[in-house]
Length: 264
Image 1 (cartoon, one colour):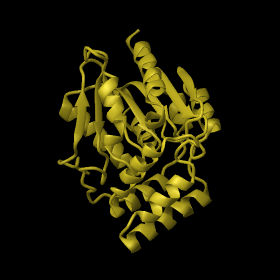
Image 2: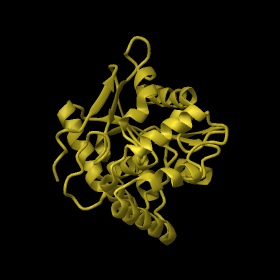
Image 3: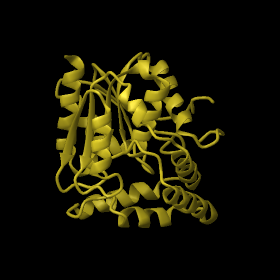
């Protein structure tokens, strides 16, 4: 396994490294408001880093078999390249799955953890079958149109989301390459349960979830918060699965609170 060399890394600020891992099937640009606002006006609150993950944005997919472990190891190599020994790692949805894989494989490199609108439990048999259905369909059609339609309809966004954000989310989904979508679906289907991993972590953690998230709902967030030894749970009212996009100020405030705990 080799780190995809052309991977884009968006970065802003100085201080504690905060690496943000995007959701499926987006790219790092979904973190634009976090990159702009989390470092603070003087740029010294955090060094915010948002990489594209395998196959998305500008990152090549590579030849590895579908596995979130490969993506987690990509991240370790990326940190090496940036000269970062330990970082606060934050992941949304699929990014959360990668963050948990990283916590299992490279726990000594964590100094804090943000798990947003994600879950530590493995997929059910039905969920795995649905992922394979989508993977096969996008490859057969060489199109992610089906994915864009299903993602919006399944409650990706809260009921009161502004039409402009709905349109932007549709556009971001439409940019996803079919091969990357299929690879990521199969990688997510193959992941195991991470609750035992979370119980071993001795770093401050934040669990964030939209109250209206039907993809990875509140009970999943509560399980993660209960498993983590030092976690704070933030529930954002009237928000769906994409909390950093739907409620960026509330999301950012929860992350800042975690950074203060990391610094304490």
